[in-house]
Length: 288
Image 1 (cartoon, one colour):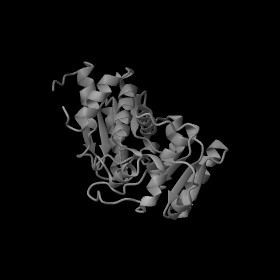
Image 2 (cartoon, one colour; image 1 turned 90 degrees about the vertical axis):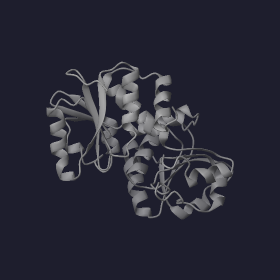
Image 3 (cartoon, one colour; image 1 turned 120 degrees about the horizontal axis):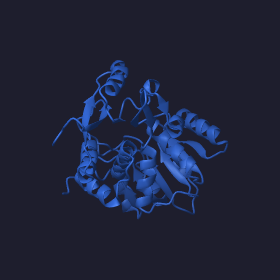
Image 4 (cartoon, rainbow, N blue to C red; image 1 turned 45 degrees about the vertical axis):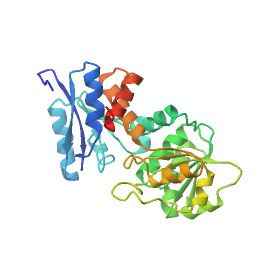
């Protein structure tokens, strides 16, 4: 790794960050494209240190940053500008250096859409079931609403959180797109068709890969495509159940890949070729 006076530094801010696969994505892309850019990890232990970290990164001429949990919303007050999509989602995962500070973007949801599209999953006009009503589910629902889906059934253990997400997104789009439901409503999902289901909770993530938000195998007979935002383990129990009942199932690895690819393109202004994105994907799983 050659680092000189012209090397541009990008990195990831969060806590924890040690497990991140982002360096594999960005350093693979930069090396292959001949860019003098290196990507490193910056652990910020406490929320109280976040403002200093952002100001310090600008002072040190950092080119760009990714933001991960738990700071995707907390970072917003410390930004010079905010992209409209990130503002609507209420979360930022990518910072681009501009005059006087950083501009915040959300590449998670464009990354999810690109991943779905690459896997041949068409969401426009389709009815979609989203499991969970936390921050990730809210962002997923926002993306779906902006991509002209049919109806989105938002299932959550507590109806209040689902209603809050639905009211906000429906209000922004002046249309009834998101339909909040309690989790048990899956038993009453209209028959006669199968649905795209996006699993947008942390249930089933390592170190508890046995978890699944809906145990009833009858539910999975209604699933045509199951997309789990989790990427560790590589095949979640949710995915196994979808496949066992004849559906297609995908994990969140390509979402992670493409949010990184889009961030890299924002930092450099140069499109990343598909073949190179595929190479970075292979590196993420140690296949080359």
